[in-house]
Image 1 (spheres, rainbow, N blue to C red):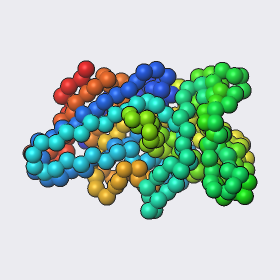
Image 2: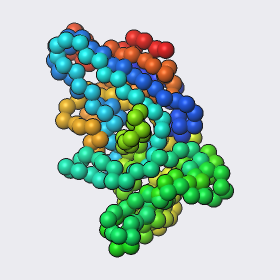
Image 3: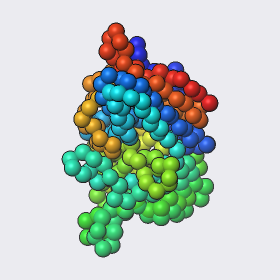
Image 4: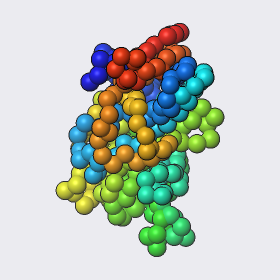
Amino acid sequence: MSDNVSTDSNESTSFGAAVASDNCRALNFISSDLGKDIDLLLMFVPPKTGKLYKDVFPVCWKILSFDATGFAAVTVDYTADSGFLVPQVQAGSLVAASNAQSCKIGQECILMTNEDGTGDYLSPAGDGDDGIGQECILMTNEDGTGDYLSPAGDGDDGVMQCRNDTQRPARLGFGYINKAGNKIEPIVMWEDIAYDFLIILNLHRVILPSSSSSKGGTIAAQLYSTLRIYAVTGYKDTGLIRSEIRSPILFEKNLVSLASFTEWMVSIDEGTGEVKIEKLISR
């Protein structure tokens, strides 16, 4: 890891902990006369188990562009307001949500199929196992042509859940709802989740699909709310990341550990030519 990377020593706070309380964060990135154009790729650290880039794919959260001359400032907002989505991969790599449902700790969604055959969808919220939390279910149309997600319903206390009820393997995504509250921004996508497979996000782990099981089953892995930033080209917002990014990590922070507002200077080291990201303000 480069000496210029901005890191956070507190890596123990998981994604589940982030959504358990008010953890909205605003990060403002500024630059001045960089000398060359720079694109920064922002992504969340993917699960550490499972077959990365085969069963589970990180998704580019945002691309920030800075011009070579003049001043620039870009603010990104992390709401910690989460949800599941039915992903559509467009133009070969861009992930869009054909259907999405907000889901929080104590809720569950179900992935199902539309009766009219138009696509997969998520069911509305319903009672979970203990009536403490909520769940969503991924279901499919009766003719098997499309999936949708139910609205979040009561699920198990202390966890978020999504179950595949489409009668077949299916894709599922997870992301954060934007500040305006009108769009979900995907951060991860699972491929070929087995029928009747239950994904559980809690304070310490996410249950991932098992490639050896055609129905049911669970595998545990951690998913942190840790943001990474790279200086790269050729990526777009919501782009599926299919392989390791071969560029130095410039920034790695657990967003929950940051103040509600932070400001960061993006610059280029005159001696090495490396891009740097340094904190200026925290409040």
